[in-house]
Image (tube, rainbow, N blue to C red; front, side):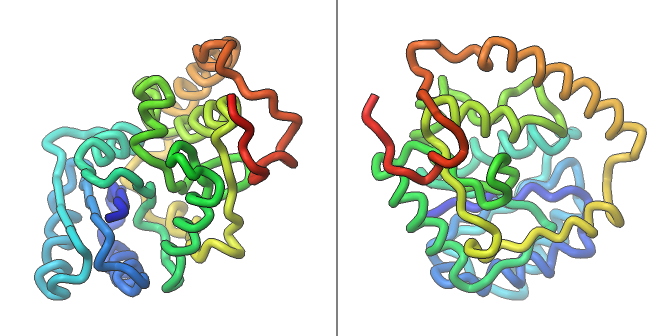
Length: 239
């Protein structure tokens, strides 16, 4: 079973589109889908209505509604805690999927991390905004996936940096991974006001740069000697 974390962000009008696309995934019966609505009963009802109409598509589909506002980063962390699967993907309601996306991602993940410890970016070379990772990596990463100090921005930047510093980062390009991110939706539909976004970005950015000064608190003895992004996806060296 592979976990797919899907925190909703108030974009209830496009949520059915995302679920319809995800349901066409080859191997959908092996997906544990965790839909976490951020104090958003309307989205939770949309997801429940979709589940009732489509029936048993995914191996497991659980829908949760937070009883207080979490904001995106804590929502992802909570969804990961609710997920039972060892390997999981972080996604959102802006995505649509090709049929074979999951098998491509899983093959690339297993090829790069035969011990199951790593972060596979399905978004950008230098930023794992969408990713496949594992609970084994969380344990390896000092018991942390996203740092709890972030609310909206920079959590994935820190996670990417930590994975690179630990020698546990790989990348599958958007041209190959079959996951398409519709950024125009973000601009048109958002549950967070522009002023709140600016305020949170300022705070999150300050936290990121402060933590980056000490390599995010990682033990210097654990740091992998990367020569640059050209090394990404090369066989891992024992350390």
